[in-house]
Figure 1: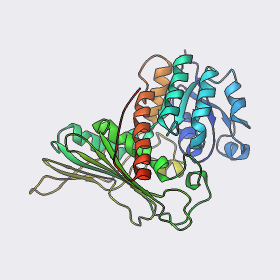
Figure 2: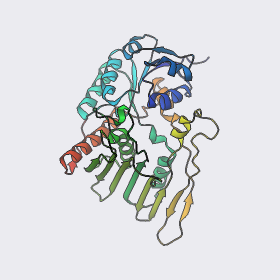
Figure 3: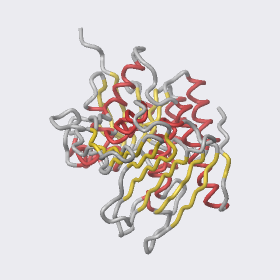
Length: 348
């Protein structure tokens, strides 16, 4: 007997909702993209002609036939919408970052506990090919003790675009956009850092918010993690560089799933998540050798959500993990503003 699908309501059909959430939800067995809250019904129906569209978030949240609400709206609306949905008895997935500061994040977590509902944050890049490859190499002991870890998301976009991510509002800027990805991957590998030293800048003419970020995470055992993002990097930078006592690892190209989604490739189709760019391992004086990069699959996030809602698995990204990311994100902002190193204090 087929399972009754978990009906999903998606709030927001901008870049994140259109490119990531809608296709990944639709490709997950057991989930049904049932409704989208958007002011542009024609845009939604061009991609999903059979999906109902409502004009605003409140209408979607109030529906009795929606089990899971996915929030893919501007960053400053994440926490208020999440709390509203949780108090309406919905399970909630929030795009990252799920709040603007740790106190707001703790308020969302409290709402989830009060209403006994699932709360999860969309840290989808845990399932990127590049990260999975580097993670496996470290776990296998290929590098020995890691002393230096460098993670870059660099692009060449010299023109400032008219969109909220590049505006002057709260939650805008490159650090709030890409910092959560960079931090989450680092924390997954090494845990929370002891201290953060951050530098944020506006480099492009007409920039309204930071478009360059260089953040150093200090760990007590001497490990240093460098997180970097820039918008004026033609030709790109290696996605990951890792140095350890047994050698160094370089992963040049980034995971391709975002590009595949933008091209309209259905998650799970032939070639989905395949990464032909091998990692390069340099074992000291010996010749470098190539290591195949594993396949990425961001569907694993929503497969995990479906399993948890049916009582068959854990939350793929817990609120506590997302709060740890939020704490580092906030500490880096304070470090950049105050021009000093800031201790990272984790608290529930």
